[in-house]
Image 1 (cartoon, chains in turn orange, cyan, yellow, blue):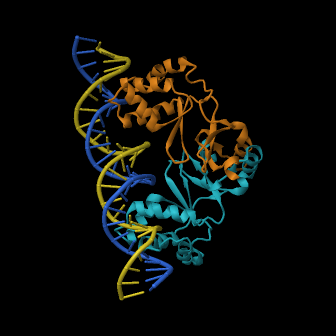
Image 2: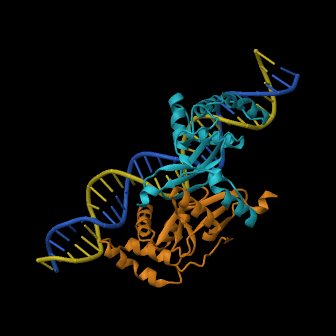
Image 3: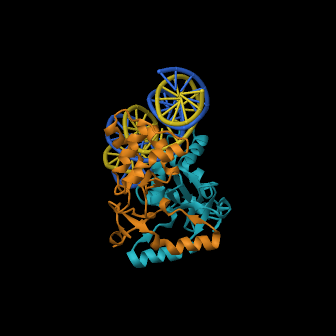
Length: 154
Length: 154
DNA sequence: GCCACTAATGCGACAAGTTGCAGCAGAGAT
DNA sequence: ATCTCTGCTGCAACTTGTCGCATTAGTGGC
């Protein structure tokens, strides 16, 4: 578990991934439009977690004509390509992980509002138990566990 | 883990809990209003999980003048009393557990959309590990784990 | 039964997404 | 350069909640 904040994801450090987006779209018969260029540019300089609303806002900074539904639809497409993943924060809002090289979940304290990353090793036992006993394959990136942190329990 | 559906919660089987709501509110200096009566009546005949929107809808059946914000605010109050608990479904929407006598989380298959209950025993190891290592107290009722079920993996 | 105190309601505005549909515009073929 | 095919966009309406504020109405005391 590590403190929340800028992650060490390969995202912004690896521009090659972003250069390939156009080709990856073309390979599937999808298109490379100005609106998608803007969103990809925004994602390329984003680390860690962002809400959908934040992404819309950042796109609007580059292109004030940005329409929310276009952004959300493009995010869906990029998720299909494995470039972003989305989950839901403790308040239920969309939360995107950009280029998650280390899949992780989240731990959220409902008392103080802090968030920590939950590494795969922290939940290995759970993941294995659900697989062995129920054949269930956990998508860790979509998990947010809520509770109270050490400090708030005192 | 059990199939989703009507739970064996003490809720509808134990009218005494509902009769006591009025007194529990009074004890805290809170009020017993017609709008709250309607919501409590709806909850009393509800088992398992409901979304906020569904509760609003059911209240409207009894009283067409029902206002959503009143329902949501009353749910907050009832949650303070420990009568309902809320979490977020896989799509991020509010989801209420009525009178959860056995605290549980949820397992949701993103391929087929099915939901299963996740019993405390299934996550004992995780809960203990987070407590021991990080002092984090998990609120299981607020947990929904997403992934793919056995059938959808084939 | 009437008062006063303040909790709760109703309402309107707002936030974050989602969806259907008509028209626009990438991309490859000619 | 133009044509065609269909993926994508922009728009508008809708859904699920949340919030602030003026007004209403439970409750206990007299």
